[in-house]
Every structure is written in structure tokens, then in C-alpha cells.
Length: 259
Image 1 (cartoon, rainbow, N blue to C red):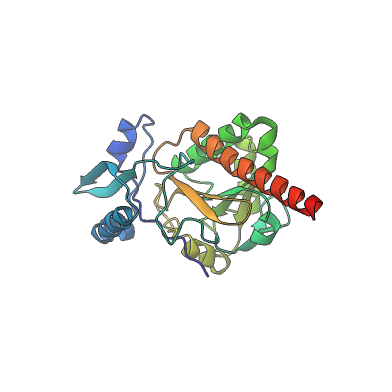
Image 2: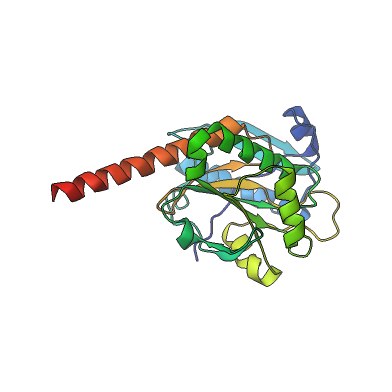
């Protein structure tokens, strides 16, 4: 199984407020203990990819934020070799709205993958709002992409709680919220290096990223959702993936007609 490594760090509460939202984000103690190692990994990966860092913030009492300069067509983060353009991890889970969603059913459709829980006090509603606004910005093209939210709180994310959350945020039908037992969801958490919500923690302590996958099922870029993400940037990267898919279909049709 392909594991989509995440070398980036979430920001501390103070840094998040300075970014303009004022939403609190709890630190995951397991991730913080690994921060020095992940910092070295991120620096090494960025150096090998020829990237320059525009921000590097470290606190004694919190995580580390690393923001690389953007290169290429995407506004999301540049992914290092070994992650970029590799097949996205496979999954198959129940959709809270009914039926199942798996990577095979998503083939041919650009999609985003993120991790959520309904009792989240700040970060998850923000992610939902940002992605929802991005889909609105796409207009009719918003129907041609998909969003996959994977629960990180199997006990709390009942079908009723999730559908109420989706309705409250007025998210469209192509925003899928996948639920299940811990043993069912854990392989997907591990594949995307996502830490689940700590049971009983009143603050958000899980991993938060938005991974962008193209119509061929390849990981192309990601947004670190521990800081505010402009919906226009998400919409822009969806449009890049949609344009690529349209170009591939046109080229395939021309090749077929020529033969």
C-alpha cells in the first residue's frame, strides 16, 4: 500500500491567530515529539527538490511550521519526489449519505482527501467551509470533482451526526464523508499518515491536510489545513486538474479518430 508521507507541521495556537482566524488548534503530543526528526526530513526533502523555504517558525511549546515556495501550476505545496505523481492510497469505506466510496469509483474524477470529525470545535468546520466555497467558485465545474472526508473519530461520527454536520455546512452531494469502525478506517489513516482524534480531547488534536488527486488517481499537491487555506487556491488547483483531464480526453479522442 502506498503511504502518502506528510513532512509538514501544524502551527501553534498563536501562529494560527496571527494568520487571521483566531481558531484554536490543540497540539498532538505524539507529533510534537517527532518534530525535530520531521524537520530534518522536510529540510532534506526540500533540498533535494531544489525548494526554498519562505517561513520556518519553531516554538519550545508547540509544533513547527514549514512553508515552501510554490513552483509549478499548483497553489498547494510542492511535494517531494517519491510522493508527487505517485498513486494515491486505495480505500473503500461507507459514505454517511449512503452507499460506499472507493478509489475505483473515483477514477476519472479529480478529488480531494481530508480528515474530519463532527465534534471538532474549529479546524474541521473551517476545512469544510473552505472546500465548500471552493466548489462554489468552480461553478458548474464543481460537479466534475469530488471531495472525500475521512472520519478520524469512529465512535463519535455516527451516520446521523455526519449528515447533520454536512447539512449544517450546506455541503453538496459530491462531498463524501466516510465513516466506519476504527479497524476499517485505520489503514486509510496510516496510508495518508493521518493521526486520529485523541478520544476525550475537547480540542482538535488530529492531523489536518487536504490532498489533491488527479483524474488518473495520482497525488499531485496538498494544502496544510492547520492554517487558513484560501478557497480560491483550492478552486484553482481543482481547475488545473480538470483542465489536465479534459486535455487527456481530447488527446485520447483525437488519437482514436486518427487510427
